[in-house]
Image (cartoon, rainbow, N blue to C red; front, side, top):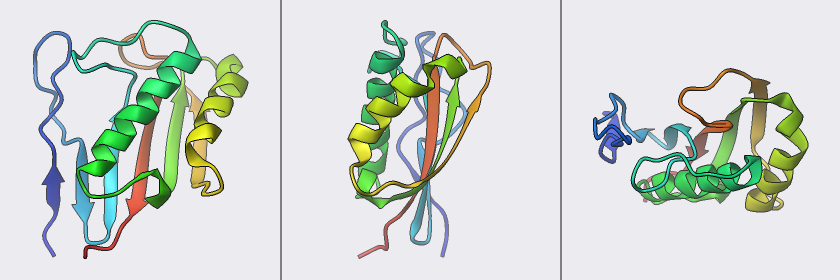
Length: 129
C-alpha cells in the first residue's frame, strides 16, 4: 500500500512553506509531524506553557482530522519541553485532552526551534474504512 501524504506543508511567519507533510498515512497508521504552538498565521502564540500546550493539542486535532482520526486514535506521542520545570503545568493540559485513552508517551527537555515551549508529534492507529 503506498504512503498517503496528508495536508499542505505549513507556512510559517516568514511566509515560506516548510519542507514536510503535516501527516503521512502508512496503511492503518498515521504519523503526525511535530506540532508547535503556531496559530493559523504561523505565529507562535503568546502565553506560558498552558496556552502553548492548548494550541499544540488543537493543531494535532486538525492534522489528525485530515486522516479521519481523532485524539482517541493516538497510540504514541513524543513530547519535547523547552524547560523541564514546565512538566507539571504541561501535564495538566495534556491529560485534559486524552481522558481515559492515554497513549504511550516519551517526554524530554530540549532546546526547541522558534520560541516554542513545547512540541508534540503523535502516531495514530485508524484502519481505513
